[in-house]
Image 1 (cartoon, rainbow over the protein chains, first blue to last red):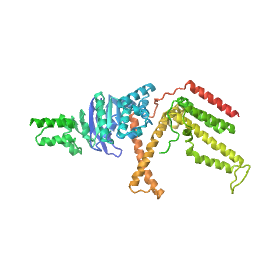
Image 2 (tube, rainbow over the protein chains, first blue to last red; image 1 turned 60 degrees about the horizontal axis):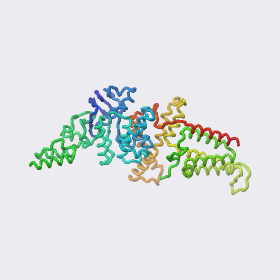
Image 3 (cartoon, one colour; image 1 turned 90 degrees about the vertical axis):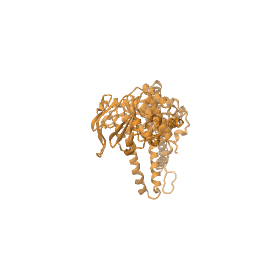
Image 4 (cartoon, helix red, strand yellow; image 1 turned 180 degrees about the horizontal axis):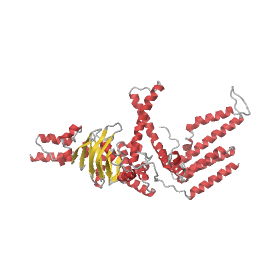
Length: 274
Length: 257
């Protein structure tokens, strides 16, 4: 669905942000992109719907080149991005108006805009905040409005760029849960983060460092990869625990490390066997 | 928290249901009328008209008079200037001040006109959702050849909407910057020449960064600064035309006297 072909991009000061990136994203896939600050993951996300255009190589979204200005509107209908800071994503004075912004840009008729706004409100459970100012909402609710604003465009692919980094842990979990449900409904998900704990549900993880893809694969292989630490990333705590247990001769299978309750069950099972 | 001035009060009154374009046109017409009316009778009639419209909205009149308060000093100044600097019959002089009868009349007339103007504007803003106002302005501007100025009506409308939406955020940022500087030992009372740059520079930097993020988010949601539709359907209905006709007749009547 989305394809990067030899994509390179330099910041205005000349520092390379992306170096020769090649990758593809399939329809319905849940991709996690991870890397420490400055690894190029946000620059990469801005390439996904043509907010940045590659200086070398090209990005194709459903066969449309993001370098082609006439295709941009079509590309943005397909790929929507939810950004880190909810505050600077709000355009409208009320939640309802904010959600209408995207569909209005697509030049949809008023009836259709209403339908989409209502639907996005229902999907995110924000109906009761319809006439509130998005600025009066909490961080978690704010991020919900930002997501609803993108959902109102009805994109096939949703990109989340460090959406939990300004939220408290509980709201962060709620957002993650929502992302998972969207994926189950068939949306393609690109989830960008520097917190490996958030990537258990991903189908595939891409690790970035200094503008390059350095590691790519299924979560069970990537999250337990010993080179993560050298890249400045901390593996999820349960995986670390599993590694320590393994060193002591207790092997907990990978599937059990995705949640504390699974992990505990497995430990108990092993304990009873002994 | 300061009481909001010129803010929208949601409702379902007759005035609320009028098309924003009708109300914009009405405010413009009334504005002209206010400054064309010389007689105190005409001004009295306009006041009566205001109270009649205000009663239609079902809102307490205080809501509208709040709009006058920030301008009160200015209005008093105008009144006093007229009172003392108009040539005419001087019934009594105080020290170097010589109030004249004509000055009193001029001053009253001028200050009352300003008050009326503010009241009519407040009537519109209280009964019209700001986004509907910008939508109305956009529709009024659309036929004008604005591209000569390098803008289009859609851009202007979005700009207006954003300014309304971002004003609170701006104030919040000022407070935050103030707090950040104060916690690093900045004392705002002592020397304004020293403290203003310390406040303004980080403030502008922050605003520019916010603006960049906002621009990205807007572009990502398909904003191109070109033609776009609106969720608000604007339809001039019978009652809009009837209201406008009634208003024009009223204006003609007032100007006759």
